[in-house]
Image (cartoon, rainbow, N blue to C red; front, side, top):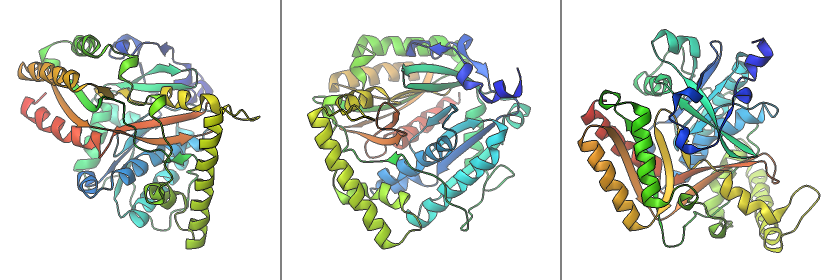
Length: 394
């Protein structure tokens, strides 16, 4: 494989068409040896969420993805959003760019939100030297969004490393003189989504490899979920009919603070006026089904509902789904049984709404939406997951 092909490694992967195949290792390929993995995590995110800053946590957590992808409009990169942080993998020619983007996110988090964003970049070769692997596959969400799924202990190793080491050659320190980065398209303009008659479940599940083949464990879990929920389409927590834009200035301030970081109060005021006007026009255009030369607004909400990451796999299941209270209880009972048998560890959070952070490259088709349970679903689920994992020691 020549250098150009290695740089475009992810784009060349075959598509995985069913989420029920995400734990099948035969679909996965190792990341190229000379690639890098950027890992971020917000310090004390649980406390921030308790202080009602969960929207700030989400937008800061997603910002490195938007910043780096804006620098590579002609290249797909594998990434995953985890609520209070993210991971993104990239070829060596993007190393300096990635450092710039991470430094900008870290600076904005510190100065605008008083949140500390841990940031680190690991060479894939170093992770392998520690005996860990990272493999990736590509899951087909829609014709406009192909989602990365990951396998191997390498990501967990990197995520644990940045939390247990205050500094290292991999860590990027805070640089208050860091240059800005292009975060255009990082938006948070929608009300929290409440699926009618259903509850939102944020779920993390990891198999215990000492108690059976992981692929079989995940197949059992997904199979049981299909029995309970009628998986796949019925569990999407973002139905198009429930999408409503948000004109509350206080609710928009996460985006405003991020996108106008370092600017004057007047420039910040102008940005607020601009997005309020965009939201007003967006509501009108979507309501009328207006089609401009660039955007078909009649299909925007349908695309929104489809192009989201409510189902993820990165060596564990990470899901934000919806169902009735009875279905939620059936799922929890099943997972409890599996946990008591030491087959898996899990964390689950239950809320009434889902939260969306958006990455918009173009309003016609080219937009991706990061999903979390409201009030910090992933962070709360992770807290419960870690307790069970420690008890299970898997």
